[in-house]
Length: 342
Image (cartoon, rainbow, N blue to C red; front, top):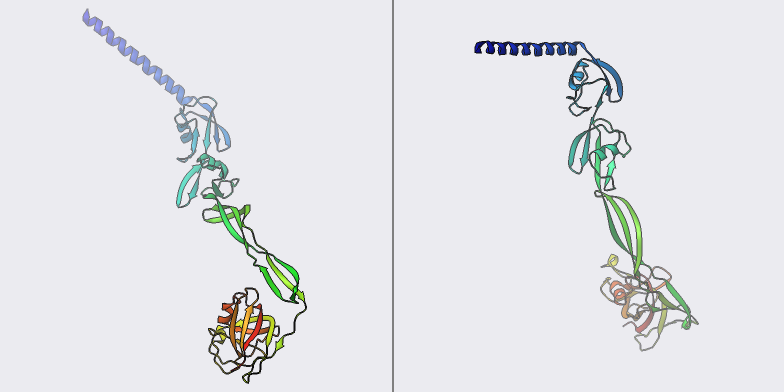
């Protein structure tokens, strides 16, 4: 009885296995000989195919559709195929992103530079200058460059020239000028907003300016009175007394004449207190006063000059420096004889 029972169990198991095998064979036959209609969208090219494939990956192999590793496939290569399934293939292209010394290659399906940068999370808030332009189309293998944008404030100081105010003075001889108040330059500070792309200046905009130091006007009194004629005599060696006084323009000469012979035969020394005069005898000692500074110096006439007719005396470099004339080059002076030649 036990043996009969065991035999029946074996027969039942064999029957069940046989049924399962038959069902599998039937399903396989149905699968092998049945097709499913699928829509394929390959980078915008849309077409319909009938396929016996069971999943998207098999469909691509069946239809000999080549895809790259970086291409995007929806709904995925392992997704099962069903009726009217839409398989979307998004093709990607390589793009090189460069910033400073660093470069990296990305694969993108975006069509513009702007879309690509958004895809790779590059901020488009003005932190970078981008080349090519954001609206440029993506081309396979193109290089997109990022250059850091810096905005800084820079300051510049400028001198403000002073003006000259002239007053007529009847107490002064005609043509004489007396500086009542020295002019002083002012200072202006300019603030600029400067934009740099890396180390390259892109733009500069004046933001504001302010006066740090106000200029001071120069006040000059100009004589309008009657000018006394110059007395053109000098004290002589014989004891006869003469006087000489004149006002006019003075200049100076220096290094280019150093060591050369003067009209008197003496060697010119720019460090000595000498001068050139058109008519006073050589050896005459005169006092020269620079009217702008009020400083005076005594010099000996040992040369003829100046060469320009509007000037009355030409001083040595040292003499011009002593009275403050040297920085001006030319200035109005008063010349008075102190002692005649000899």
